[in-house]
Length: 319
Image (tube, rainbow, N blue to C red; front, side, top):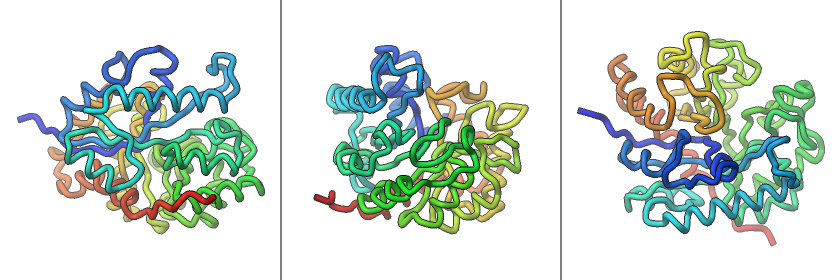
């Protein structure tokens, strides 16, 4: 009998792909679409990142790209309202899933899409943004990244940006951030910290993966590590077992309630075992056959990220 799990995934770049290709969110040739999700899972919440790299902006300023992708996202939510809806908190996620709809949450990957400006966060929160990845691969005015200026932490502007995020109930995502920036976020964040799509450096030594010390800090801060299915981050075998090794290490560090899915759908070359979002059904079955406690798997697939979203007090927007 095929298993249809409930999933809550912390990161996909599908909105950028739709913006870039013109394909709709409902059904497309990418790694995530509404049709496949509804066929594969008994309930789904998905964090959609607004992201765009240098060289892919179609000649627009990054802050203009943010507006275009936001408008595209809003149009897709309206066009397919019977099947998917924007949610701004845990109660809305629960309601959407109870109604048989996909719960969509919004993030920004790379604060340069908001011009790294704390004054733009109030509008972003009103737009529905609930998570911000402070940097992408490039350093910006807030901090160095894991690939550029990796020893530079949060600037004064970065600290002000983080503080304003906390006031508005927007979670900080430390995926892509420099290690120095990571520790600055851990020292100053008033909310749980997420690494929405990052794996374990002690399992596979990649600059984008997290050290055991970083993972332990996220656990102690009541945050979440979202496991990434990008083949370059998981290990040489690039299969389900490779991903499982990262899960096992987080569990060994005490992270059973602090690990989630962060597939990076439509943002990378995925492992062959999981070429798109539907591969999570086989991964769920694989973990069951590997004799994991089913509650641990359910927490990993859905409950842990749901807990963080539900426990965040969404502040009134400051006037």
